[in-house]
Length: 246
Image (cartoon, rainbow, N blue to C red; front, side, top):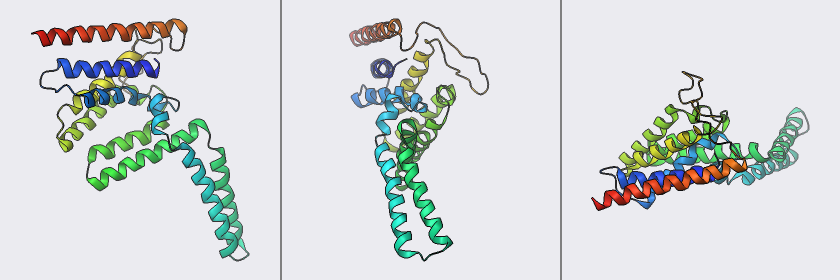
């Protein structure tokens, strides 16, 4: 399913959580969190909507390698005497430069996500927020996994919900786990409607659960995705209005 459809379903799910779950405050921030969480499972795909947003540093990563190569070359030229160390320095400088030049598209984005995740890990350690460090680790690891593998499992959903629970404990914002967990689960449920399905219990079972209604990327599939989003939105809206009346 397309990222835009996942986002729409995640946001609608956030409305459902805030409007239908007893004791959970209706919160625009919570709805936004559910939308964010609905995209998190696709961090294993370098071209996913969230990967592109979190990997905004990819061009900086490329140039960082190039500049590191230039800096090392300058240091080698001016500071190291002729000999093996000088040759090694220029070789390393060339390697850094070539690596930076070679980083394109998905590879650059993966490395950028590692930097983004590492930043979250360090911030979590500094502020003593375990949930933030765990979120950073998730962002670091997910891009290097096969698409629709471990990020598309019940275990990843539970982990994401637990991260939300820890955030709730740290920030005192009731409902974080509900919004985060429901948003993440909405992604897996939506992908279950595609022909590829979802291996919910990987690695315990390689069975792909699916109700193959949608062929992602096809014209018919796109129309069906829109229909599902509209139908789901109307259903949630009707339930929320009905609950408010009683």
